[in-house]
Image 1 (cartoon, rainbow, N blue to C red):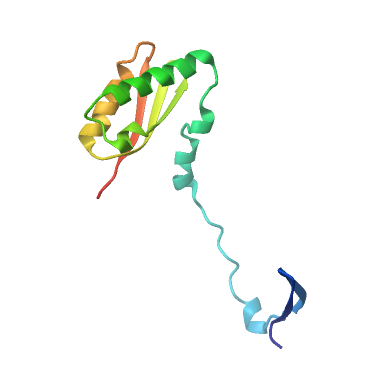
Image 2 (cartoon, rainbow, N blue to C red):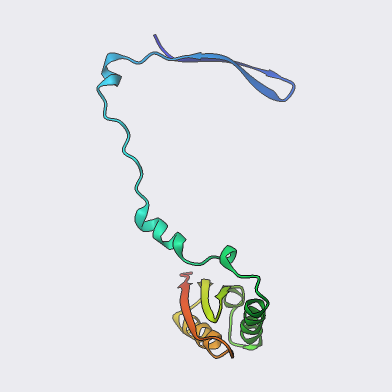
Length: 129
């Protein structure tokens, strides 16, 4: 026996009337699927994201000051101007794509130079064109 599904369309809704499947003996002997292990890839997900940004007024002011410093710098690309800035207390994380290693360093320096910043974690990624 095989596998079949009867379906028909009512208005714009697809309705299934039933499905029957029967496994062959050879199917029962196959190995179960291996669970995906994304532990290494998901480690990056533990890094601060924009959702981790505090709404504390001091943190909001710090982000605004860093953004202003970046926007005032005439040597920063549009990619560099659009980086994510996440603050928790005086700790800053910057993330996103930039155009060159020099721009990555420059953005880290600009963020660190803002009054009130004690450390900067530079997670910017240089994009290849």
